[in-house]
Length: 223
Length: 308
Image (cartoon, rainbow over all chains, first blue to last red; front, top):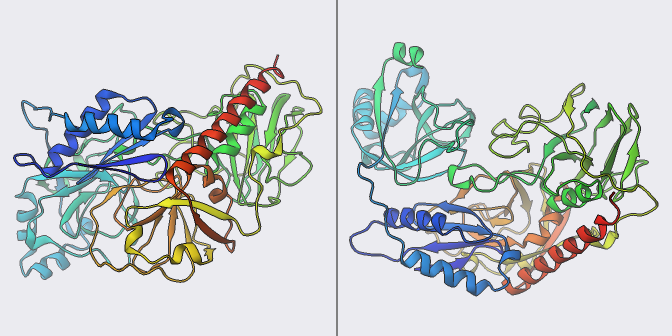
């Protein structure tokens, strides 16, 4: 396990390679254990694909090594919380051309038809590797290799909310209108970020996701 | 009580001390770019340090209040209002804050704080997400904002804050940094060169131009969390230093991190300003941070005697 400072107010924790558990499972276990431990002055616990970063107030920890020591103990004993049923979220996506300006390009690149792109995209189980870029934006791993596509050379200044995109070997959903450089292949009517909720982001690191194709009529009628 | 905006200024937003605890959901920390300035003027008007005030950029707004009140402004404001002290303001009196005397951002605090609705636990404006503050946007002419009830009122007299508490702006500021995870993959150019702040800089990040920093590794990095002060180096070799509205995850090499105490200097950089960097140890960064927080604690106690 690596524990290293990131600036003077954050610490990066990188789990060691362990047999029997994926890095992502360890990341989630460490994040959960840190949240439960609620160390004083630790204000943010941020899981990423291969690491967890803890943001802390240096005024609460006169001895930095003491903080690192406590983190090491908590992380070393972190046990994955075994969910009875793994969290599986189904996200409806409309792949109509109006919502999918880059679908043809992705299909051409793969040497397949657009319908096959949809079949491949809806046929895989994805895992949330990280939430970032924008509030509630999930980075989803597990994309079919045929669909891997480089980000746009010039990002769009506005990507509409709900857009489903492909960036490199990942797929993701833009919860709100932002600039963005991913290839857009569809749009979901579902909100992935809810300001009114106590847990505003619908997806957490480690959650599983499946996409389901819906028609334009279903998209419009979605509530 | 209400605050009426006569003129909005160049980019005036409601800001507090941000939204800690939501980075795992992808929500940036946000809040005042120069948190120290906002904390200090909040203390001067008897508010909690995290109360919401105005952040103005280069050209301030013109405002008036519907009742007599007490306000304070930070040290970069020009005009008739002396900074770093409470002022009694009459109902309907117009305050034109004009062009900033120096720096990039200045702050105004009013007793009771700006009581805009809380979004995700904070009152600050997130311009990129379009929420928080006043309708998720910068202030326009004619906006009317609610002001909270003042708790304690300071005795307004002939006193002001010791100006030494807020760093004096140098002509060519030196930002202190601690090394980042990929520092060894670069030459020492960041520390020897001079870098100029570019006009595309904003609350998400400050872009710099100088001698390009070359990385002697090609390897792509797995994204990790990033935060205000992180010095990222994209492939073009020109550093970007993240601000409080920056996204929460990033995959560019991290050359260094500006120390927490110097984020106030970072917030005051204008396009065209030249900066240099100097490296300090983590121990030193923590020492100056604790020392500053101690000074603030002493100030808080001292001010308690000025409130009734």
